Image (cartoon, rainbow, N blue to C red; front, side, top):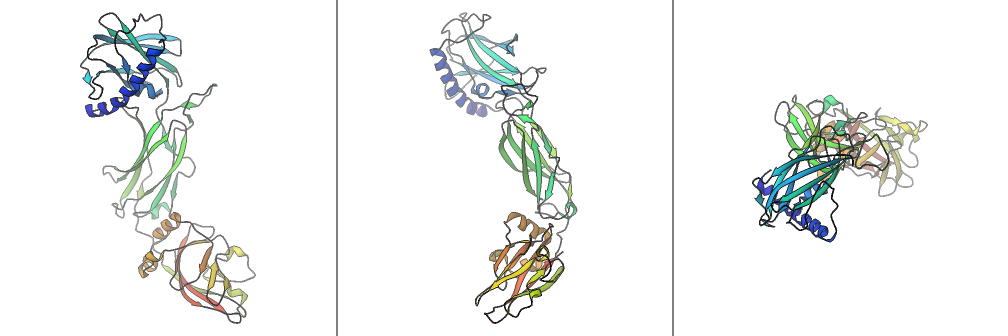
Length: 426
């Protein structure tokens, strides 16, 4: 940690420390008989970093900042530790050693390293008393407490850990495709010590969940993070990431997730990571099959021309169940013909800004699958208009299609309305 970082940390440290000092001057400070403290021997402030963080891991090194006036004659600092209100010991005595001056408060700041015992059980309560000893024989004690907590854990979920959002197989993922990863942070964990006994594990808070992509053996590239995903309790979340466009067909891509827990200014972060299975980047999957069809509505039209089966590429007989009727003419007026899905097939009308001829003719199953995932699909196509393009997710499957309206004949009370269309599929 640089001195500039320490100064930034200490601005808040000094403010909180001064508040603590002011409160202490109004109320007698509880002390153990171990201490022989004299009143008002000098100033002693405890850094805010150890008073605001309440959980530390076994063997974790904590930097304690003690502040005092430059005119105070400080001899040394003593750390006394009480474990679970039973075991107590002097951790060590630390002489004044190259303190630095905080530019805001003008106080001298002495960093002292304290190490959490390695053998303490999870959830153990610990009290730490830091005594500033002055050359005149006086002492002033400052105190903080914490519970022993486990370092963070991270894993892929056991159920549905990976979801390919375009609906294609793992081997068909191409550059820019979305892949969802279900992660479990601090599995089985709790954030605070309960009032009744529990076998759950107390975990440290996770300050950030960062994610990276790695192409082959290249250096991982950071692509984003989630701030403060959990204060320690178990947390399950899904992160959607894109196969990097920098990856070419045939290259291997992996994603790396890292959960960080770093109580500033601890001497080291705690991190847990998981690496996803590799994806071999494939060329986009085309939609090579083009089919055409039509549906009609109105007096004189055949009941068997009302619905269309997109999977079979043919009109669906009126007598058949609605489950196979992907497209139905639902009504007509002198100005419009309306369409809808008669089953669980769902559509999204592609915005006009994306409907040059190339979008319908050149979009791959990957592109359409990602588009379908990112938008809210509906059953109603609305009023049919020539040139309108719809992304379609077919009933009961993850299969996607692109459908384009090619012709509309309006009907009246005595004539047949008809809509013609074509669609591309796998």
